[in-house]
Length: 232
Image (cartoon, rainbow, N blue to C red; front, top):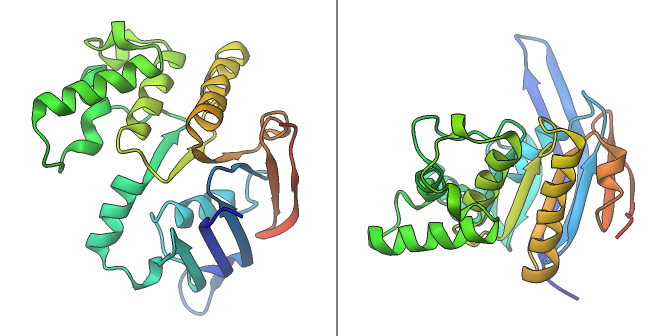
């Protein structure tokens, strides 16, 4: 049995919207994701999936409950350690790509290496390796405004992979793409999962995309209502 990369127990998230009002978004989430799993978290808008993603991605803290990432208690980490974990252990892929508009593809892929100690030459070689992996090496010098949506997302995936993260966290990664391009991006995730054994957590409202993953976790009104195998 492979070890859990993510282990969450009784995760509660409340937002305080002025006294005495508080809004509870997540109501006691239990979730374990093992190394090498390809899991989708599916739910309609307002189900709590973005809130859950922010906690998994160490972008936000839970109000109660415990979250172990690779066996470490995230709540015990200092802000500095959390920032380092986000940068090195989690590869983010967003719906809107989040690329730096003035930087070319190569420089965008190198962003997570900003604080790395290795030489610029090595960083560039590594970035080119990642671009090659996603079929974008010939576009290394192009800026985002010179790339199509699918190309931007491939650059974003290369950036997510550059630190060899423990998890790839993909938030609606095909949401801004047409159907054909979306399938190409999903094929890339399948390759990363099957060929490199990457642990991938896909956040989506699409049942069709979720059906491509090994396991589907369904959120409804801040609770997990189903957790079962997907189509692959």
